[in-house]
Length: 369
Ligand code: ADP
Ligand code: MG
Image 1 (cartoon, rainbow, N blue to C red):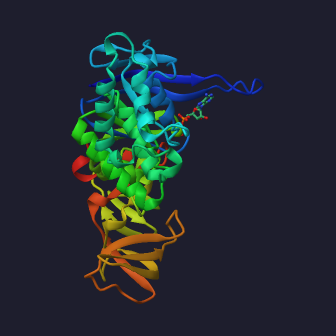
Image 2: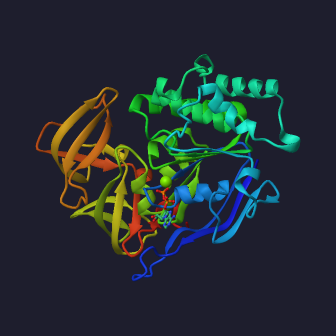
């Protein structure tokens, strides 16, 4: 099921009568989610992810804009008639019911044409349980399950109604790191097997990048960029997106463009054809540094961390915005051990941003962008 958002907006009135400041939780969100895809909705806490999800589910009413499922306008449709499955961060299972009863529960209130026989209900419940691999646990109570298993029950309960759209709001936040990794792969598998259009909300960029067909990056209610994870990582539209994606995070420097050359400190570190003279903010991905004894960028070496396949070189530079500069170098390379380390830069891993509004300034081949 294709899901289309048209100028979707949610404004919450002020809770503080004196200040009168309303909150624009979601601001003019327009996007068509293709049928059968998994979309990662990503951004820091408070950026409007949950509000977007609740409007799609029908739990919250938009202040403006429209929502379509396929060709149907569902903006005014009640939540229970939208055919969405919703999974929250806290699994919210019924503690006094078994796993089986929890999964069956949404089916027992179906009415009219949707009403199912007892056997049909059991069939559906077992199929959903198999899909999330908890069919062996059907007679347990939630308290007898691990966090990961409880979240699987919650997902099975969302799937059992065969929803047209699956909405997951930070579903892995309560799990420990290992389970989080495992469960996110499970969610990806289930999504592929069922082909259900899925929106996965998270503040964890790595989580979103690893399982999404496309990601939507939000900030303060406003969509910043939409694209395939790798494309957004490789071609961020502004400083916020560049900083939000990537581990270790992008290195940020104060720089200046003079005569189509980028200066960091006194050193001309890169040719930046087509850019007017101006001070800029420079982002350099950790993998954008090349060890080079004659390289133009000289940093003060702090330490070298060996991480198996790669080494991470930690250094400092007077023009760095962050306390340290972190580069990722192939472990095959000999890392200098002196007081300084010198780099040349991979041009496609270096991004320039406007001092005025933090938007991207393209150079070289993309100077017309
Ligand atoms: P996220 O899920 O990305 O953390 P939310 O969608 O929950 O963000 O919230 C977006 C913004 O809307 C926040 O500033 C939040 O404080 C505000 N907000 C959310 N729900 C309400 C509400 N019921 N009343 C007033 N403000 C709200
Ligand atoms: Mg939220």
